[in-house]
Image 1 (cartoon, one colour):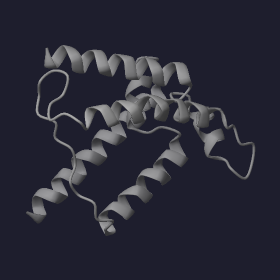
Image 2 (tube, one colour):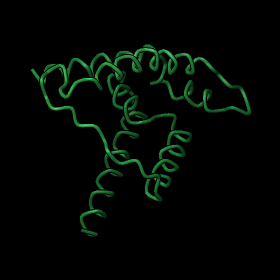
Image 3 (tube, one colour):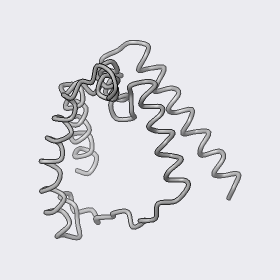
Image 4 (cartoon, helix red, strand yellow):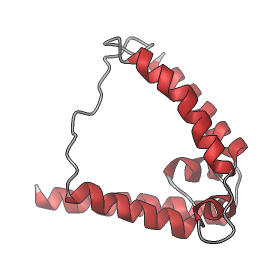
Length: 138
């Protein structure tokens, strides 16, 4: 049941990303271009997502378990530290250069083409490098 619900949630999320235009790097870059030809349409996508997420999150916080019966494990960290700020900056710069972030990049693989494949490969390489660095520290 857990695997099926994860696949279903991922499929719905991916279809939503494709339909909303978040898998189109040109549309994303136009949204991020506040000083140029700004395209505010993704603002409505994000607002719609908040309208769905906020009540669902409020309802979910009342219980101790997910709909599939798994324990509800939410992050407890609340500090804004150097790692968080630097990670956010790297994420933002990468998003602004490529027009992809991880979710839309995975959904874009379903649409084909070499650009999402290249981004996805670079994303996996970056994750692997991070893991290697973290293991050497520990």
